[in-house]
Image (cartoon, rainbow, N blue to C red; front, side):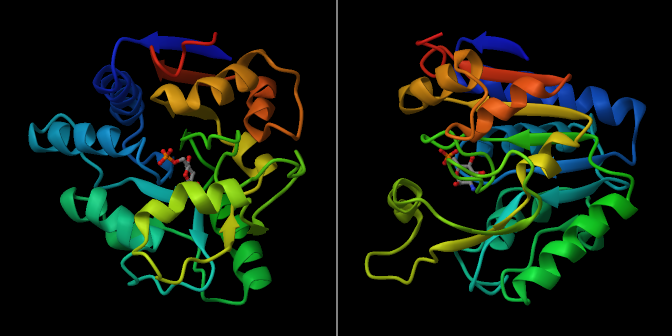
Length: 240
Ligand code: GLP
């Protein structure tokens, strides 16, 4: 696991965009694994800016998102499909047919198996972008998720429901279940790029990097991956 402590969230986004630009320069039809949450928004803005400067094209790129809430229609304002359309897909030249997000409304077991098959049939993920939950989750693999887990339904931890409720209106229905790539699914990506910013992530970053490999911090599983780059800002890296 390589760790870069950048000076600011903007620098985190720029260094992460460099990695993606480098990958696309040698592999135009790369398969990217993408994440939601507030952390990757700055990366997506940087990718959009580079696309407008003709530095990047996504015409041949395929994407697979990590997760989706169960019970929300893709067009629901808080669905991860809507998030990705607004934050990235509608603003770059990607073919909409090449963007994949688990469907939280299909039969979850069938959708989970079909998602794994789709990833495999396209040759696997070249580079997986990850954020980090304050409790150490990646995707929606909450603490105590099996390190061998594959795409499946997970119940959200209370802390995650609390953290993510900021995206929902007061009183609005917020799902407590999600469909998420598993830890083993994530570890199959050829390259992993985990981003974390802000002091609220400092403890999770330390546990992920310096703690024992343990299901109580799902992100610590990345210690086993031969090509993981963690990019944090000075606040998120303050306990390293
Ligand atoms: C959600 C997502 C994760 C993300 C996490 C952190 O739970 N499922 O993929 O990493 O939020 O979000 P934020 O970047 O907003 O702190």
